[in-house]
View 1 (cartoon, rainbow, N blue to C red):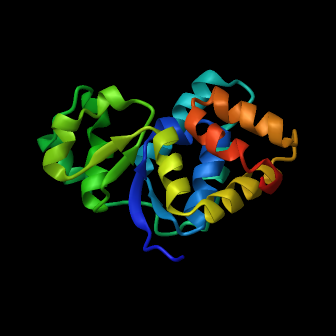
View 2: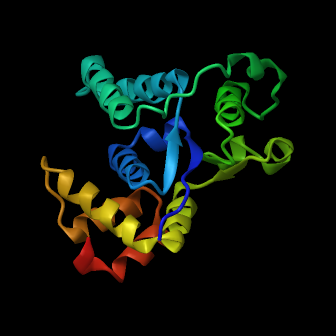
Length: 191
């Protein structure tokens, strides 16, 4: 079954963790949705990762960004900046994410920081904030075969260290994805 992919803005907090970033990228590459981000979103997750991980270099992070943009050349949203001043969110520093969603005609922002994107602030723009666990579970309901393919590709791409199925599912659980893990657990042989 083919589905028309819809644009979804990925907040920096879901791009920051490498395992989740990789899975969301592979899900986007299946065509189930169109991942969207901005240079500001890219800068935010990279800046935070540099602050929290002394083993990471800016060159490595810029290479990851380059590979992301190469894999999904239509993902980078531009021309949203003029929308920012008119937007109101609990954290003014998150307005750029909503502005990107409006500019990209995205109905969903995937974020772990749901409190920073209240429905009352997003509804007038027909945008909804979703936790990555709910988002991936929805994609699974939409097309489980493509999600399983993306999960397998993501899991087997990790080489240092490689993940067996149990380790991969444990990592997803630690990333706050219990619904996703529950769905995937029934298909262990396929992932």
